[in-house]
Image (tube, rainbow, N blue to C red; front, side, top):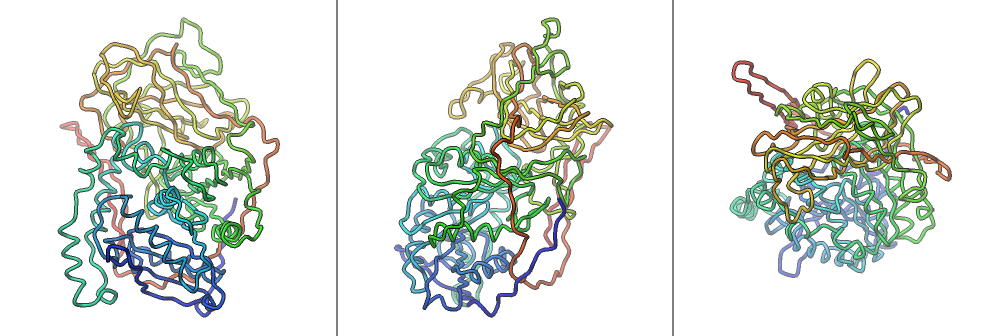
Length: 591
């Protein structure tokens, strides 16, 4: 699917930009907002669209805001970018991610917006990542004026499906993101906005109030009240407004789309494309879509009572990717859209693949092939993993998983015969393992790979499990060495076709560095093939599926910027032969 050149709209003369609007809080703090309004909004009030994040509206998100806010305003909506308390120019201090006060402030801000003379009284929330999280969290609090949400790259479970932990395994993303969050919290407000007399005192207070966020998060390695707060899956029924849930296959957050569509009682639709952690109108890998027009359809229907047909859209619109040889980045990903009317879908069936010897088969293996196998992976098994959450930075950043042969060399693998018919995996699978460990603590990483006829191996999906969390993330228990346990490893959702002539591979390892923190000691796992198999969601029928068509990409005139210094994005693996050490060096410099 080729990518067309985007249409850029110049809306400067049809909207009003209000650089600073103070939104008062009940405790005396003021939050700083930017408003972009239609010219005639006071005479003809319009709904407000709120994005509420800590990434500094004056500089951090300015390029994106310029393209989105002007487009929304020119198309009949008041666009609002609000700095969370303690960020940008907003007063107060940042406490942590998704705290109750953040939600309380949002509820007050929504009420304030609804009362403005340019607002019709209806408010929608949109956001990606943090803004996607808090859109769901605020919706669960049910402020009366909040009528609809668009949540991108978000989570319903802060413990299992965020940048901190995966299957009870500590992600290195915790340190990466924690450092970035620390940096955002340490930045000063803009003197032009808060005044020359005030900005320095505000900055000093922020610096004094900074926390070492990774240490705070790592103090909660179990699924306790800390993580349950802000995890809307604790009570899906609390969300009563319509939700459009969006993500991308190389983003870290896809599970929320499935869970929201399946569990919300309110209207909910899902879109998952080939993209990374980006708004889909700028999505990489492409093809990008006319996402702003899709937003307008959602807002028009739920905020203006215009029948745009979004309630009749398929429950899920998923991009079914074709097989592709791995590379550190892709500009575009070949495939096609599936319009799945109901989710879960009757056209998707679970297919079981059994282990036997080193083979993978749809039929149980003979008992003679049920010999136990052991694995103790080299610690560098996982270097081909790519980023847990790719940002879709394209050629400037090597983020995607590489040829898996290096990681497979340190893994236990089970291969199918070359496929005689295509196999389309659509959804979230799992792998059941009967496993024993020689250590009381161990992790297992499982990958679903596609083996090309020339031997190249691409990763299709994967999952991690801290084996002490086999029964509960709230109450982990140590392993008894030598004792076999039946465990389930949940796999990341995907929609991808394994073509004829390719093999399907399940790879099992005891390490997945540098994505996941290692176990305390190297562990040897013993797998019993007789009690192990993979359950994969396979597309069997497209009967009743609907055609999917998105408008071409368009957005407002981009911000003019001058780069004073070029950035540098690189990933290096340095292996020292004499002392058998390896260093993985990631450089991230935005310039």
